[in-house]
Image 1 (tube, rainbow over the protein chains, first blue to last red):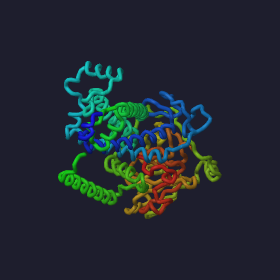
Image 2 (image 1 turned 180 degrees about the horizontal axis):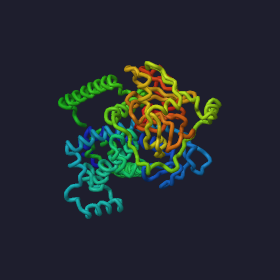
Image 3 (image 1 turned 90 degrees about the vertical axis):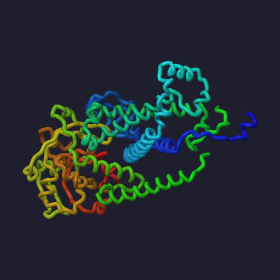
Image 4 (image 1 turned 135 degrees about the horizontal axis):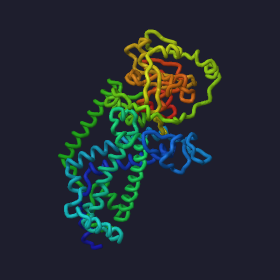
Length: 245
Length: 252
């Protein structure tokens, strides 16, 4: 590394305070939702389609694990520890954190131009060729270029847009569609999905998609310079002089 | 590093003050309108309060979904119940003719009603879904008399805030707020799908609270107490649920 670059330690602004705070709040809430969601799921690891479903109904599919309740016939001789009580309390509290952080982020993102400037693919990238080029870059495991230090490429932008504006709203919707009080006021939230059990099944799949996003996201951060990118998401700045790994 | 400018400090200060002021105002409003649930304390207090308050404000005046009779589940699932005790078996042997529902607390005339007395009140039926916190559900027709009628009969006093209902099984008790109790769909249920309510589904008397999850629809109900102070009962958190780690409000 040249000596000169070590002397001038200038930094570039990367992530705004609102983005950083809502990012980490959502991260904490998502981990809590994932763990507690799993705990709630194992009390009835059977999934159905339509309005109703129970052990006397034909399931759509069954997760081949023991349940945490002995009323579910799983074929296993034992019952897992039942953690539903605190899991439910924490699930809904964490959901509030995620929803409120999401609202702040969404309003800020649309209002400040963050979504338009940083997330919607640039005009020149809105074509199949741009996507294919990026996918090829990932498969050849080429390191990210200089431009990607301070901006997202078209695949990142698309992934973030899908998570923020499709998966996130969908997991909230399917969650609310399981609430008897909420569906009293808005029955269509359940009807449109095909019923309460369909909502539960979609909720389950969307949580897998979000987990998949989390794993890919963390892997990508790790391979493209973990410390540097963590620093950017925590302090908001990136060192100009530091080489990416 | 971003320098902390004066402008940022002022904006931050104003935002923090607005936040604190907003929270204080929200807390006062919530207390005034009874929007804090009995278990709205501790770590999960903020989440529970937000959920309960939002549901009270947005949905509490609306009826739960009813379904066409064609959607009644052919094979409803009866959840586990504790094996009946001797006094229950005795009542069952005589066809529950000695079953009594006691109504007391903040009422003008405490009552003791037999099932026949309840059946003489206006009979309603509804096709609603039971949704368990575990995730499963079924639809059935429920037949009975609205709790609101019984409370009016007893002359519920205006200071009443919660209605406590308990099971013949010792230690099992629940409560709901007065708006939920007065909803026409909150039903003292004695029949199911055109027959008597089977014991395994909570017969002879179950309080159906269809706007909340199944565990609020307590089985074997024999006692109703109106109260203006829920803290005097049990551990003061509104029902036996928080003692088992479950939320008092289950409308979600």
